[in-house]
Image (tube, rainbow, N blue to C red):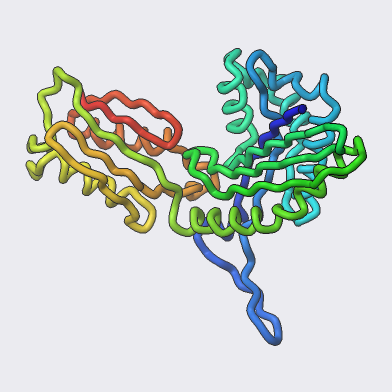
Length: 299
């Protein structure tokens, strides 16, 4: 059995939708809502010791699968980015600064302007009773890792070595539902913001705790943090998981997908805004980001 894993990623919004609007086109009998259309880049998964920069060169089935997955999105009106072209541009511009395959993938997705990546696992099974292709599609919001859609498809067994045809057959049964689910959740992100987690804690040597009064109004630290988060979320969408004297966790803070200029609004940019605010209070902090979680350690 040969297993092929491919990853897709990247969605850019139409400018009018970035602003949170849902433009409508009227017809004689009904109103048609214009939906957000994603831009997608297909990226091959790399196993241990495989290099994302060369992985397609040695396996024709991977090249077939990556092409068919890209075509499937093209046929449904999505704009796609050519992986090879983007990879060449990244190499030419010295984008890759690490030998870690995880870092290389992350750097390539960031370079492509990805908002969403879709992990696609293509499993080719060959036996005496025929050949079958199984496909698992999993969509994630790139900057947070939150799941958007998951579907599993199977081609059934046939006496053929046409992996491309079987890949298409496996995808046909699941792709429409997969895209519809992904579209619905992505539109929710456009309208209500993408979710990140904020974890505030204190350095052991810190003079502060959550009850410490800070700022000109001398409010408890926990209240000051909540007031800032409330002001700096999309539509005041946030939730506090819990607060103790040494820790405060916001488990669902919604931040915009794009800034006012239409550029990606990342968790790193949000953390910088928070850092600058705490600096006005003469509070020093350490920032760490892992996936969709921002860790703030107050010194």
